[in-house]
Image (cartoon, rainbow, N blue to C red; front, side, top):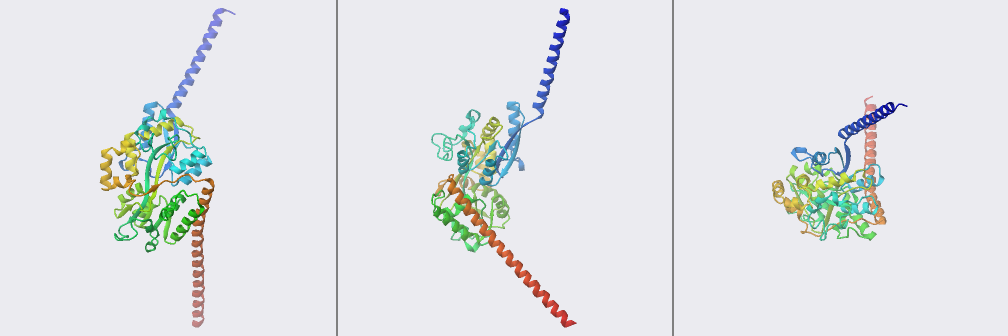
Length: 416
C-alpha cells in the first residue's frame, strides 16, 4: 500500500479519535454544570435557620459556598422528624439514605452500637476547634455518648423544663418549681405531655427521684404507674403540636425543651419557664453521618460549615437552643439579641448548674423492649378508655333516640 495513503488513514483516525474525546469531554463538562449532587439532611423540625422572616438561609448559603469553593453544585434535600425514635426507625430500615442526621445523645449511642454511623474524617472538619472545651477535647464532659467525638459533632444542647401560662397558673401556686405541677388535678385538661417514650418516662422518673437509666424493671413500672395517674388530667401527648397549643392558650402547662420555650414566648408573653427542683434531663444533639451515606466528604464539609461563626450564630438565634460553639457564646450581638427577646433569656438556656441534671443513656435491648411495652401499655390503655367513652356515648345517644321515638309515637296516637 502507498505510504502516503497509510499516513492519511492514520491521520484521519487520530482526528476522529480527538473529535470523539472532545465531544465526550464537552458532554461531561455540560453534565457537571447542570446536574447537582444531592445532599440528604435529616433534622429535627424548626432546628435550622431557613431564611424565613429575614433570617439567614443556612442550607442555601452552604450550596453557594460549596460551589464557589469546590466548583461542584450541591443541592441540599432537607427533611425533618419529630422524635429520635421515628428517626432511628427510618435509619435502621435503610429505606432512605441520608448524608447528615442530628440525633440526641442516647440515640447516637444506639446508632454506634448498631454500626449505623460512619467515623468522621476531621481533615474535613477543621472548625471543630470552635467548640467549647466541655464538648470537645481532653477536658470534655459532654461527650459521654461518643467519647472523643469519633462519630459526632455537637450541634445544640439544652435542658428540659416546664412551660406554664401565668394567666392560668397564679404566682402563689405551691407546685411551681416542681414536676408536681404536671400532676396537679386543678389543671385537668390544661396539661400537655411528651409524645415520646423516653422524655415522657423521664418526667415521671425525675419526679419520683428515680434513675432515668435504671437497670431495675421495678423503677420503670413505678414511672408507668405515675404516668397512668397523670393521663386522666392530660389534654394530649404532643411534640411539635405544642407550639400552637401553648402560644394560643389552649393549654397552660407542658414539659418541653428550654430553647423552644423562647420561641413560644415570642408569640405569648404570658408564658414562663423553670427547671424542676427534683432534677431534669440535659441533652446534646449532634451531627452524624450514616454509614450508608453516598456523599461522606461533602457531608463532612457541611458539618464543618455549620461550625462557622456566622452560620452557628444564625442557627442559635433561630432555634434559641444553647450552642456548644464558643464563638456563639462570646458573640455580643447574639447576647444582645437574646436580651431583646427576654431579659433573662441567655441565663435561661445556658444555666446548667441551678438544678441536678443527668442524661439519657442508650438502654440495653431488654430494657428497650420493656420501655416500648410499657409505653404501648400506657397508650393502649388510653385508647381503650377513649373507646369506652365513645361506646357509652353511642349507647346513651341510641337510648335517647329510642326514647324520643316512642314519646313522639305515643303523642301521635293520642292525637289520632
